[in-house]
Length: 452
Image (cartoon, rainbow, N blue to C red; front, side):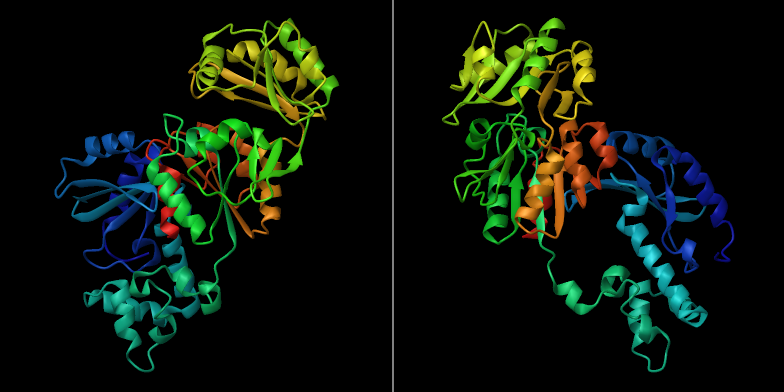
């Protein structure tokens, strides 16, 4: 470690005060490139930025030079605080992802590997240039101009022109080649705003991406009829997954290219268990003409009222008020659902969750707080299988997914990168590559806008 006196105790004190945000020391000190005036750079993991700002302000706002700022870069929030502590300039940096996934950490580790590979003479040369007052990048570029210096080999590797060493070290052909990537988004709570609509900015960005040849599509729990009204302003060209993957519809061919219907015997068993448990089934079917129906016996709670009444007000013609589900069970069954309090739904969930013929989706109703949905469909009707099917269908090399609710966990499992909107369920945030702006802030579109 660097021989500058006193920095370690100051850094340890700061790390202790920031322990709630999983801090790590980064920058020049851990790799022995610190000189007089170097910052103590501390990276933090923060998902609640209000809590981070409050904690930082409470502990450090009285210190000299205190500044606190927040902005959005590439769809990700970042918060930066600067101040002087015990004579040391300090920079705190927080993002909503683990420190080891942050660019600051990755750059430092890339620099560490280069220093180890090129040896002590190279490190000493960089350090001497830094002592002369040059930053890493400027020092490297200056040293690289001198013939015979060891810096020539590393000039492009350590923050040359401010770029990450890991990128600069890639072969030129690899840098230029664009990996064929499928971008797959959920609808409700993710792509849709709080009014259950596609924002104008989102539509504009997505259409620009599609027009430029990027691969984008949707996987939703909604039906074809419900979702297509919302997607009418987006020029989708790729297959789309509906009902959590019961159907995969190809808009170019005008037909489903995969269907996964639930067998009627399983559907009957689920309906009977629902009714014995005091639940009120919603039976989703397709008739012989592939016309969709939703059979139900009435509206019995406010969660059902929110869903059924809103659909009926919008002119949804699928609903069939019945005394018996017999007619529906003679059709092709899409799913058997119920909306109620989680404590009432749990016994039915436990009764069928391990069935080899059934896939269960159980999670909160984002439009009716306190209520949950319980949905049973055919085993392959899940977003994981749908996402992998879509990836194979378009021959993508990489899958990037966006989601907010528990039924998106399977999609996240299949993804190479997965991004949770800021309003997502905590289980998705834990699994995400990173957290992006909320659906209200059109986070998915603003993240993808960086591809333009």
